[in-house]
Amino acid sequence: MDRFREVETFVTVVEAGSFVKAAERLRISKSVASRIVNDLEERLGGRLLQRTTRQLSLTEAGQAYYERCQQILDEMREADGAVGMFSANVVGLLKVNAPLTFGTMHLADIWGEFLRRNPQVNLDVTLMDRVVDLVSEGFDMAVRISTQLPPSSLITRKLASSRVVLCASPAYLEKHGTPKTPEAMADHEFIGYSYWRTGDSLKLESADKVEGVKVHPRLRVNNGDTCRAAALDGLGIIFQPTFIIGEDLKAGTLVEILPEWHSEEAGIYAVYPVRKHLSAKVRVLVDYLAEVFKDAPWNSLGK
Image (cartoon, rainbow, N blue to C red; front, side, top):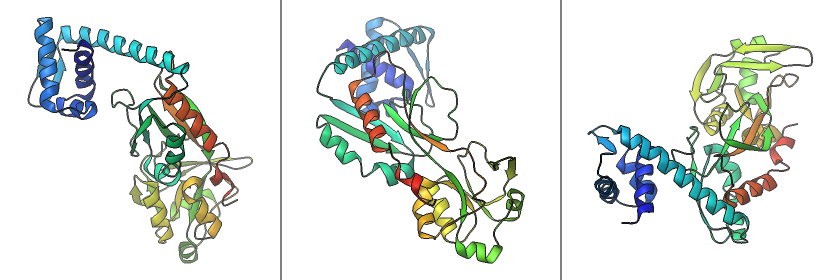
């Protein structure tokens, strides 16, 4: 048995938390993954994993072996990356995660050019609004959008930013009136976004004042596209970035509210795990995204 394959399978099983998920990541069957780990335990002469019908857990020996194997795999990846830095050819599979709406609206059309520039690279793109664990879920890089990224061991590179705007449809404003002050927002229908860091509290700033606004969502959604659709349907006010609603502001189908007040801008970042040597394929993708979004088109919309 290839010892590298044993180590890679064992580490993947531990990080995935199950043989089924590990097999999916490694593109092998569950039975093959189980057999590889069994053969590894037999070769080592000791149990590495405790198996129950519901979960896997490491034995004491398994924990020590896992930590050493993880270090070895990291060093091998770094070695590959160091070679790649000097290679004109960028090769291999890139697993990328990005938010659903941003990925659909602003990434879908740019993958083709990236693949044409890098013909030996394969892309595996997963779109979801949940914040993934890059290391345990096997991603090389992610695009994340936040007004403030939480502390993390990940490396970040800012690609662009986007204004976050309060807005509603003309039909809603005609029926309910336009709020003239932040305090007046409490009397209006609001469409909440589940993943905002501040929840139902909005922080707004003017030239000389800061206001905290508590809103009461009639509808709460974990997807910006749905927030936008609900606003266009006249269901209430939304608080969304211009990369989603910029064209609507330009067309007048959504109208900005309280334009003299503003919030923190949403930063758009490339994030990737710490490595002594950044792999060539990740470096090339991050540089490409920075090039594409250097002059973000949505920042001129709705102004």
